Image (cartoon, rainbow, N blue to C red; front, side):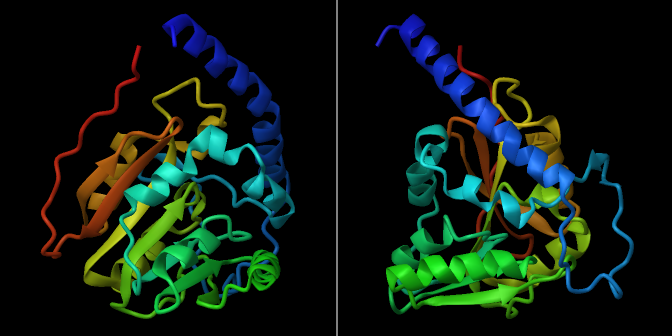
Length: 260
């Protein structure tokens, strides 16, 4: 396909997707999260973390956007699932699972002998997940109501923890990263997926994007090391982190640059 034609199609998809994406983000910004479970015990939420302004949690009213028909075309989600390298029988977590777009796909990958811990701080999201899982006969899920400071996961049990476009919304990232680190096996990995702030053409508000530099700053400061990355998605960065004491080999970050 000629480059000019390819760019035209990309711009056309962008123009079609942008209004829907902006609407979903407006819902997230205009409506406060109604349940966080530990507001009386948690420390006050900081307005920013290590120089990054923290975004507001997406309200469950915006859940239909998570399972929109165009998502595979826009984000190439199937590529991400392949990049995770999940094996049958593993214990994985979809943290910030929402209504289960990725949760149900993970459940298929780990198989009947595997387990998917599905965590969200909004019980309404877990109710929506339950409806979708029941309709599909999925039974290897462990729905978990988390808090703003902890995902309430078992310690040292996870092979993989997936965070898709949700980490930037954590009101208490330091506490959450501490809990996430504790949940990993010695060879466990965190797969962090965030919209690229380096790319102005990604149709997401700036507050809901992250740069490579900011991600590395926050994860290295909390006991993680980079063990891999995947740069083949159209809109998102994918980082793989492990505990800094893991036997997994440290990887050097490859700087993302937009293809011309």
